[in-house]
Amino acid sequence: MKNFKEKLALVPTKPGSYQMKNKDGVIIYVGKAKNLKNRLKSYFTGTATGKTRMLVEDIDDFEYIVTSSELESLILEITLIKKYDPKYNILLTDDKTYPYIELTNEKYPRLKVVRNTKRKKNKNYLYGPYPNVGAARKTVNMINRLYPLRKCDRLKKDLCLYYHIGECLGYCKKDILKEEIDTMKKEIISFLKGDAKVITKKINKEMKKASDNLNYEKALEYKEMLEDINITLRKQKIDLNNTNSFDLINYYTDKNYLSIEIFFIRDGLLFGRHNEIIQTISDYKDQVLEYLIKFYEKSSILPKKLYIPDDLDEELLKEYFNLDVIIPKRGKLKKLIDLAKENAKEQLDLKEETIKNDDKIRMDAINELKDLLKLDNVSRMESFDNSHLFGTFYVGGMVVFNDFLPLKKEYRKYKISTNVKDDLNAMREVLYRRYYKVLMENLEKPNLIVMDGGKLQISVAKEIIDSLNLNIPIIGLVKDDKHKTSYIMNDKYEKLEVKKDSNLFLFLTKIQDEVHRYAITYHRNIKSKGMLSSMLDVIPGIGEVKKKKLLKRFGSLKKIKEASEDELIEVIGEKETKHLLKYLKNI
Image (cartoon, rainbow, N blue to C red; front, side, top):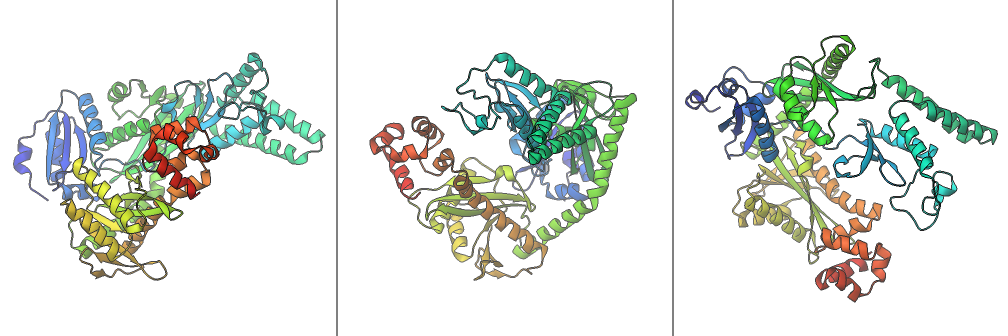
């Protein structure tokens, strides 16, 4: 640990944001403080443990920016976190957003499960979030069976199967009264808000009808629907004497761990809950703030109100989110706040030992790898693999791990030149593109490159890294004749033995499996979905604009195959047409 005594003496006692840097000048942590001097001193005095200790050992320098208020320092902190994505700041464990149920605002509405709520310009009704995507899909499927809403994305030219089985009114051919559609919408919205009377009556009617027609299998399905509704509503109902919609937040902290609990209350129902356990670095209240900001920015929809415990900064949250933030002092809402804290504690008690063990196993594996390679730092690892379609049209994948945890938002896919005919040249192109961009855009370099193979793959990686004058260590995971990882090879082509039952070997194998999965899934998705737009994604030279032109002009793979070369050139140009025709010959 460096001695910052002289530098700390010059730090003011004003509010602001501070940035910790490692020996490469990379920002590894961003925080905020009411009193910069006190906060920064706290890192370098006393005994640090857990994640804080790892951070302090990694700090080579720090900077700070003084602000005029705590709100200003919070905004600055979040801005810098977004810009630099520091490794020690909070990482949400799941990049996916919670799904919502959407009833579209169209002449002929559709009901569906959506995640990307930001893209909707004409949304009429969004309900959620649903922490359980299975429950959301089950609800949508049930409503779509009971109500003959439009099922297709675009109106078809003729009546489809849904019309013939009574699950669509035939909007493409029939004139449907607006009043009939409005009645359906009203009943669906009422059900999604927790009033099941109308829909229960409807299910009972359909169940009796099926039973009278001796269709007992269908009658049983309707009976199970009723049971699902009753169980769900019983679990969700909270005696609040109101139909407000809000989120309620509390937390529990123990040693270096923070458990955050969020209750989603919608129209008086406990719609779902979310829990996350994180290791703390700075003041736990600041960590709760940072977490909430990241969580709600990810979900894209803010609740109408936030209820919080009395030790969080009500005014700061109110100003940042620009919504009602309330601290309940008594009554049912105060009891609910206390219940959220109990749940946060319960979750931490349940998972704390497992998390501690996992952290220790990872840190032991990291230290073993550092000793094995004689390196000071191996935190950030980047690994690569290729896949191809029909022996041509290679694509590459890169995965990123930080302290053996995947950073999925930093994964990258690469379309590779059609001239490439083998794995090594495919890898050469991917590595050059990746690290040329790192160099040109001053991106964070990995501490270690992990190649899926031995001497040949390492040689290609060394060739590219040396040509760009970068200094990045490289290892290869060498397979045996049964295609199983056998040993590690360093960039001096030395064999490094690692016990196959060791945690280090298991973590490295996990990286190898993940990069292989990531690269091959690209092609599998294209083939399994059979989607023209996805297939066009792998053809070099055909970007988003030209892809849209092809889809607009021809609409299907069959019609593109039937098109003449001149017709294709007219849409996307001569060079791209050659790539496309070459691709079409292989499928």
